[in-house]
Amino acid sequence: MFGFTRTARVGTAAAALALAVTLVATGCSAGSGGTGGGEGEGDLSITFLPKNLGNPYFDTSNSGGEEAIGEFGGTYEQVGPSEATPTSQVQYIQTAAQQGVGGLVISANDPSAICDALDEARSAGVKVVTFDSDTDAGCRDLFINQATAEGIAQAQVDLIAEQIGDAGQIAVLSAAANATNQNAWIELMKEDLAADHPNIELVDVVYGDDDDQTSFDRTAALLQTYPDLKGIVSPTTVGIAAAGRYLSTSEYKGRVALTGLGTPNQLREYVEDGTITAFALWNPADLGYLAAFAAKALIEGDITGAEGDSFEAGKLGEFTVGADATVLLGDPFVFDADNIADFDF
Ligand code: RAM
Image 1 (cartoon, rainbow, N blue to C red):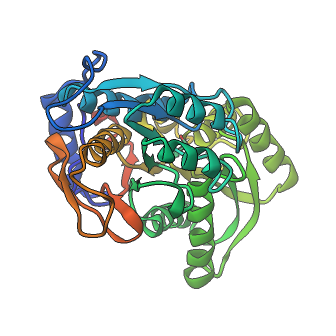
Image 2: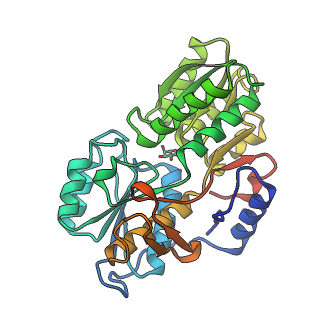
């Protein structure tokens, strides 16, 4: 499994090297989960529920979960809606509860719209781990956070500021309007811009719903509406890939900067053709892997989600639960023309 080390730092050569070495040294498990039931107490059948299916980011994160579950001998399943709308996950949560799975690992499309369903699942004994995009804290046992929201916001503001000479109009192309993760990052980006970048004007925030075509169309509309636009920040892997595709064959290529959060495989061609200079992300596979081990620790009663609880997460080592029942994976990482060849996800 390609893996970021927990000590990776934004844009450092050492981190890039560690990543590259891990990439070469390890492989990704393609097998399905085990036969159910681990060595400890509890039912290690664990269902992964992404925001929507068909998103390479979640394919990678959930393959990390599958790898972990295979290692500890549980049963992996992935289910999910085709559209990332606030209530589209409810039916899958209800089904998991009826099946009596041991754990549910979910990236939430809305902080509160799925809470009733999650409450019912938890009442039925299902341990609920949010990862990637949280719910309200009271609706889950644990949240596995990819990186601090402040760090993710800062990385994107730094990137766009550098790419447009710290001045001019920018817009944000986000995911679904209610997405907990993107909304938290955008609020913090606004704060960073106001505090440190007086000459950058954020003129609009638009939503592509983590749908490729919608994101593509929103990009076209932004460029028409704001002829002086200098840059687009897209804090979603779906959005940035669609915007890259639009820009790469348009008159705006190289004139309007594009950055945000993306996967190397989806953006490689746009880095190579000069549409994108640099973008950020974390390792989605490690995020899913960590979330699976967290679910195991909850199911087996090793942890309850209390601050200071700690648990083992296989090859990633030991993690400790922080405030608000949150576990932190690491730091965001910046990809550019110099390091993108080292990554394959
Ligand atoms: C998309 C999803 C996901 C987010 C990434 C960066 O794949 O919106 O929730 O974390 O982008």
